[in-house]
Image (tube, rainbow, N blue to C red; front, side):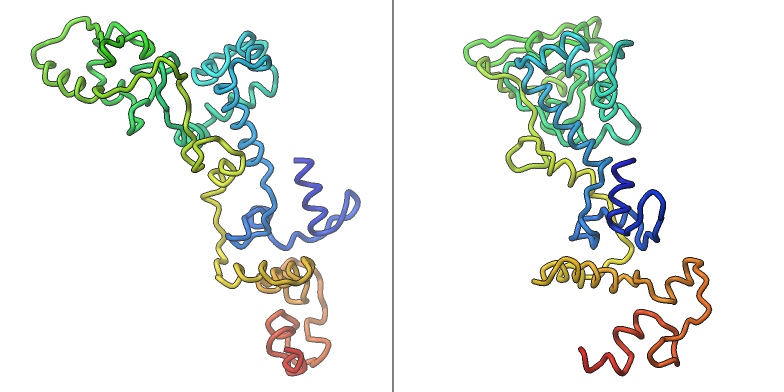
Length: 301
């Protein structure tokens, strides 16, 4: 919050003792230039993207010292997924856990991850979406899940390689005759699994062509629903102009009608006695008049 306050002061002017008018909402200023904003980083979203990178590395770099320390102290990435709390959790570990379990935030990370199967030692058969469609087997076959004796088992524990092919060894409590067709559909669903004993299970990040997590792609994902009401194609061309950034910023404000004209100051409850244009003394001082319709301006254009 303090950093954002400094950013706002820098953008609009002012300091601790003097607060100046914020002519555009901070949400609009943080929109990308493609969405007609200024491209300022939204620090809250950027922080989530950085935390996502830490979570990604905690899974993929589990052999490194820092990851082994966290695994020993907090239970590692698996503990994050299952939301098992520890009374001695450090504050940034709680922040890391928040991207997994806070309302409305869980989906952005998990929804963009796909399992790449290796030996099956990290993937839980029933409780994790290792199939191509990502649907959990416990959700798709709830009745069979209740009858299974292998809940919370990893794929590696539910079968073995025989002659180069994977064979399942599933155990059930009791199956009724009416459930036999369901089992047949279930077995058809899980056939064709390719187990590679020489590879580790991995995550694939679907928001980047490389399949690897990047903060840039995660930030774009978090920012995908941001929109501005003033959509106009002209803004895409402004930032391509080969002029100083100060002039571009002025043009950006001009086209949004966010300059400190008398008309705009009055809308913001600034006491203006004389609203007339100081040049013609006929019309109210507003942007359309000053920059486009005033007869003395036309020769300049």
